[in-house]
Amino acid sequence: MEPEVLSSILRGGTILPGDKRMTAAPRDPSWDPDQYDRFEAERDRAALDLLVRLPPDLEPRTVHDLGCGTGRHAALLKRRWPGAEVRGLDRDPAMLDACRSRPEGVIWEQGDVADWSPDRPVDLIFANASLHWAPDHAALFPRLARRLSRGGVLAVQMPIQAGTRHHQVVAEVAADGPWAGRLARLARVPRPLLTAEAYHDLLSPTCGEVDLWSTTYLHEIHGPDPVLEWLKGAGLRPHLAALADDPRLTRDFLSRLGAALSDAFPARAGGAALLPFPRLFLVARRG
Image (cartoon, rainbow, N blue to C red):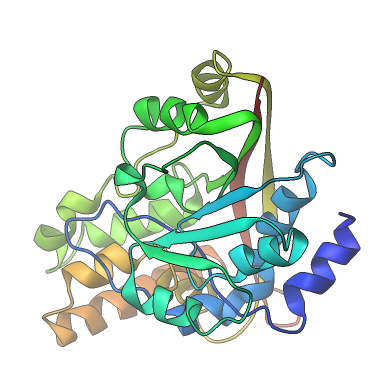
């Protein structure tokens, strides 16, 4: 499918906002689809880039979207292959409530990727911005590859959090204030990704074709405290869950963090902030 066609489908008609994720936080954060979708167009660019790289000869009969969020991409996949059985998996009830309002005929399931076990081989496993929350990638990725049918495809996109400036600012503020004790155990949530070479080596014994690449997007984002608002949609969910029973502490933490992020990512000409955001992609096909 051509990029401009995918872009039109992603933004048109019955496709609604959402994203995907699996949590490994000390408590299970509640996801807010509206907050996440404040930057829908920017977040969707990575999903679009991943979808464009699916093999052109792929004609799946079974498709699973792991960490489907509010189901936009699962719905897109169903529209792309209407004869396929498409299933969307997510662990968050609010996200699945949004999924179930969709008309495309996707089967929605609540669960965790760590426990996911399809009853038959799968032709396409799609996971956009979800698997970075899951633990033990050294075991997870070979297991996902083994779930593929012959010729089946594993398509994954994951944010590269470690070493980014916004992640460093969050860690610095989290460690310095009355909230530090509660947030100390979040220092490695989500966990750093493995190297691209490691993912290649994990997948290549099962998949004859493994295509990996990385991209750093430079997002132009607008509004008051735009980087803070971006992070509240996803990366800060474990922090907000850990502070959820103390609204004043939450407010003070967000105020301090917002000021620090505004210093790190000042408004440019025209008022927008520029947020560099690196992501790792892979498309692996079983031989």
